Amino acid sequence: MHNAQYLRSLLTGQNSRQGLWILPLLMALALSVWIATRQPTFIDSQNLLNLVAQAVPLLVAALGQLVVVLIGGLDLSVGAVISLTTAILASGAPAYVVIPGLFLAAAVIGLVNGLTIARLNVHPIIATLSTASVVQGVTLLIRPVAGGEIPAVVTQMVGGSVLGVPMPVVWTVGAVALGWKLVHASRFGLHLFAVGGGAAVASSYGIRVERITISAYVLSALFAAAAGMVVAGRVASGDPNIGALFAIESITAVALGGVQLAGGIGSVIGAFTGAAFLALLNNGMNLENISAFIQTVIKGLILLAVVAMQPRKTIGL
Image 1 (spheres, rainbow, N blue to C red):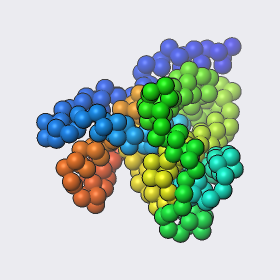
Image 2: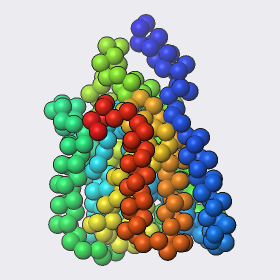
Image 3: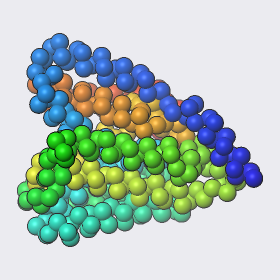
Image 4: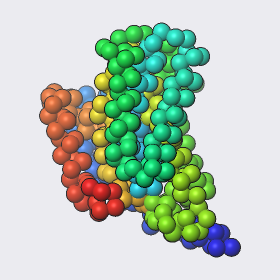
């Protein structure tokens, strides 16, 4: 009885837990207008399609990060998993071996993260940063430098089309739909919000906090592996360093989307708008020929500003 009442209270209060995503949406629209006035090629259909293709890996990674952040965690191993995925895909093994293999590897990485955090009580930042270091080392053993060949089926899955619809659009719709189902249309999603709102209270209502925590980190790693597939399909090679910025950018995307880094507040639409804003920013800076180093500085400052505006005690920042 108490469990049912608690879950109903979560449902009725769900709108208050969505986070402030309207602001980044307006920011993205304003940025689009500004870029279009400076760079007429921005609204070219080919550039817009390229923009969507560039945004997909970050969006997918951000959706995985969202699942973890909702319970009050962080996953700094996202980028390492993406790099590992490209290295595995470029290993020369058949597609029917490497594709299941990379998702299995990602699940194991997520499981290690979840167990370390849930059972050993290691802080998420320390746990996932340590895992990222190990995974990065393994990636360099598999592929020390960029190169190799990606299976044709992967490049087709990323760069082809279905019934005339470009695959980047299909990936975007599919990723958002899956994220929405997991976060907003399932009991698991309710439990994510509950754990993020207060693990002790959630546990007192019968929610298995440890299982939810482990599942969240496994899902984050699986989303990262999917993002890695998209990256590999786009660049058509493996690269041990290509995922370097994805952890920070995925956290920035969810934070920009109004997701509370302390947990319990956020939405898929928030992660989407945050990722869209960053993708627009990246595209605009590229069109303006801004140095990649300066771009990194700008995105770092954005993350710093966003984190500075959020309560940080709960996440240990």
